[in-house]
Length: 432
Ligand SMILES: [Zn+2]
Image 1 (cartoon, protein in one colour):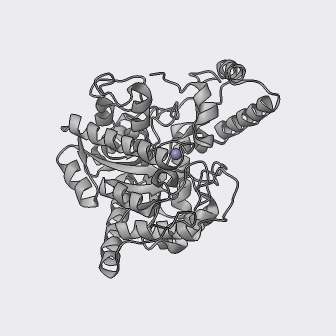
Image 2 (tube, helix red, strand yellow):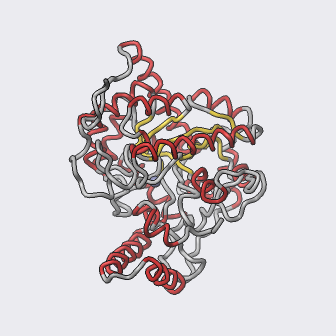
Image 3 (cartoon, helix red, strand yellow):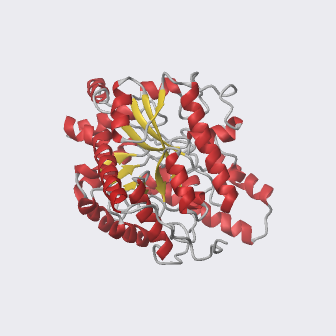
């Protein structure tokens, strides 16, 4: 598969901001050095990741496998090094990953049943990965599972749906996905859904609709984590007000450090203290570095200008390929990722930080965080900045384990009180 998404897909099909996190050609905009961490700190970080499971909130390997081979693990065997991907088993082991929420993302342009079917195919791919590589992956749905699987030396394999379009407006579909092992749902992807506003779309509802509120309550009832990455601040606000369990941001960073709408504003960060939720800091270059974000924003305005001028898709692609060669966006760095962690710590506190890389959903990671083998370098940087061993363990996984346990307790309590919801979105036809 191509190392970089075909630009046509980047520009015309794929999610708005996330995909413009494309590409920073190697060395193209001058040397941005990332000081390598002292070997002793990397060693200490690595040792810590052997005591607590490092839980990553978001990895797009399933969609990358769909693009590469339509999930044919014979054609793309991740037990072997796969340099065109950011994820394979040798590098997962080198990076000491303990648990992964695999994103079962499907594009927001797929509507209704098409989205549901494609999401089911993504779920099936994750299950196939678990079947095929049983020494490496084992399915997990609870915090206890994660700890047990990690202790057994395997990687706990969890799933997250990325966008409410994946349930086709059906709480029954939501419950069925949960039964298949899906542990969280991001309420929207890049586009609004009928019942929730997205961060990168024009606000329509001002947050959640009444049915959107039903979705959040049903997720609490199921014990499915409510993921607020990609949603608008109003949707974050509504969900925080409603959710009986801690929420997560499976792959977002701090808006005060990099002012893009996909990141979390300070007022929302402060509210995580009462909610107990966690921001899983992402490595998406355009959400990490203000310079990268600015360059990508310029790309977008240019795209709109060219479309207005009536250029066809091939001409636009050629234009951007040329631009990528001559003046690609500047890269983000590992140190900038650590800056986001510093900021969230200052505003929300150490108990509200996790890691959500978005590997294989980005074309290139920050310098120093190029693939799944690099996690220890990030924790080494935190140790260098004075984070304690206990701090590192919380960020790596203890915070998220706490969130999972709380959500499980809320679900157990709610399931004693009531059955599943019978709510339907307003546009649904009444049953005969
Ligand atoms: Zn995303």
